[in-house]
Image 1 (cartoon, rainbow, N blue to C red):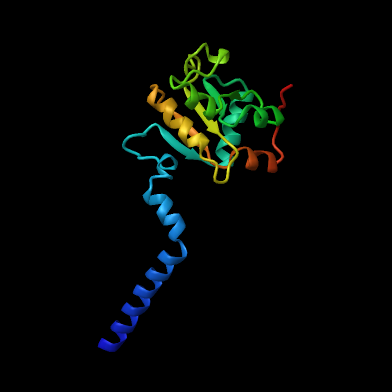
Image 2: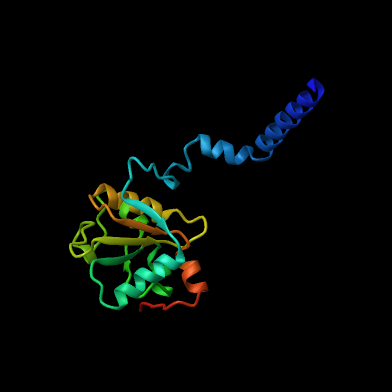
Length: 169
C-alpha cells in the first residue's frame, strides 16, 4: 500500500512540474499581473456578469420590440465598428477611453461615460481572447452603473451566428 501511495505521489509531483515547465511563459505573464484586467472580483464588481449568445439575442429582441433601457456598447476600435456591429450599438473604443485619462469618449457622450436612458448595458468586443469588453465594463461600473452584462462571445460569435449586422460609413 505504501508503495502505491509513493507511486501516486511521484506521478502527481511529476505532472505538476511538467505542467509548470510547459506553461512557464504563461505563468510568468500571470505573475507579472498581465491578466489582472481580464478577471472580475465578484465582491468589487457585483454589477457585472457574463452572458451567452442566447441571452444577448434575447436582450436584442427585447430592444427591437421596444423595450427601453437596453444599450449595446461595442468596445472595439473605430475601424472594426465601422466594418460591422450589432445594430444600434454605441461605439466606445477602450483605447480612446484609456488614452484620455478622464474616460472622455468624444462627442457621442458629451465628454463622459453617461447613459441617462440606460438601465442595462451590454458590452462586447471581438470575442475569443479579446479583453476590452471586460476592461470597459469595469470602467463603466466604477462610474456607478450596476447592471452591466458582458457578451463574452462578442462580435465573432454574433456574426458567425448570422444575426443582424449594421455597418457605418
